[in-house]
Length: 552
View 1 (cartoon, rainbow, N blue to C red):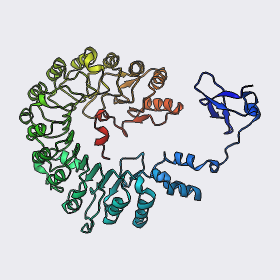
View 2 (cartoon, helix red, strand yellow):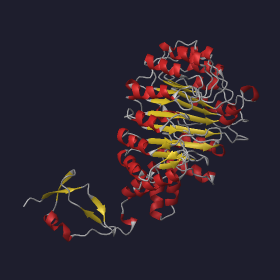
View 3 (tube, rainbow, N blue to C red):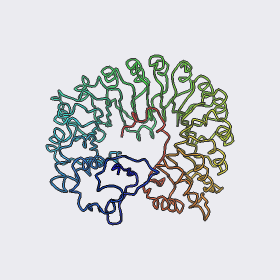
View 4 (tube, helix red, strand yellow):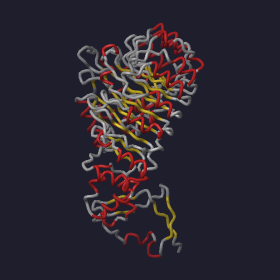
């Protein structure tokens, strides 16, 4: 008798008592193995596997593989379970590739670690993390000569470093700082309003030549709310010296910095020839007079993010945009006029990413110009939210009658329009076969009340049928506006079953949210349905440089 048998490795599970069982299945992928004479298929029922009563029987390699999915906080907790786990967690450096130490760190899924004893933390960096450490962020109290020296000497593979000075009232003494990580690819510096960093930066200029991504994060709230004339801003960091010592920068993100103006952009243009992405969001003193030299000198620039800046028509029109490689543009919340946008978009090459939310100058004429010139053909992401001077009929025509636009569209945000009905989205979703991020609806507020009611069931059904790649879906209509039938659970089922890649479904808090959440939780998809009070969806994930632009 041939001792070679086929056993399915797909149909493996556990019974009610926790013991493993093997279910033969000839329709799945099978694996051929050699079995002894007493382990042929006919004799398998005689053997009952040993019940797993303790994790202590698992080998070290499997435990380490499980630990690799845990956050740093959970790893620290595991060290208190038993002596064996303490040794495994402490001696396997690959478990400590990332450390987030700021208490208000946005990487909640990673877990921020609170450091109580500096000496023990320094010892851990040099032993437990060492060469495995790739990413670390440091609050101001941990930005010391001793810690930076350990990172330089014991962490040669460190590539991502965040230095958060935002809460600083006084800095440590850096006169003895003669060592700093020299293989960094990304550096993020969070500025303080009152602390000048030049004394510190002067000590590290010689170590940042390897940088290709630079984030300098200012105080967004103060810069965006007050006008430039009303804001007393101090140049707390020297942009000129940074660009001189980091000539290979590809991505620069200057976020919410009150003192950044066109003179600083001129300095960047003169020294960063390899620049591909420049983000100036919430830099209100930037008017665009430097863009002509910027685009001429930085010929590789593809992405320009100008949300809530002070750009003006006259300055934007001095640039020969037709000869540039610009493909991604964000001019949300700017004061560009309709006339300026018509002239501007008549020169811009084809765009793969366009965001014009809260841009009053973006009107029907501007959108029709983009459609006629084919500027949006092949566009992957489009944000038309809260464009008050853009009519629904023009947008409907774009989404239903422009296959050159919709056939590659992966992200769409069209919210803030009171005139939209459910039929608009039922008609439009039929053409969004590649959509991955979809944001629709209008949030209720004290100044905006919607008279009509939106029936949501057919919108969900359209998404389930036509949007198999949907990953993030947000519906902003409030409970008073949404209407749904007694059979709404059936349509929710269709969306959940057919859109298997759906990671986030955001709804306003109310009865429909509760029902949808319960539906997904019954299918053991617990973290998909979320509320608009806690989460907000954006199309920025469709940017080519999104991973490099993330700084928190």
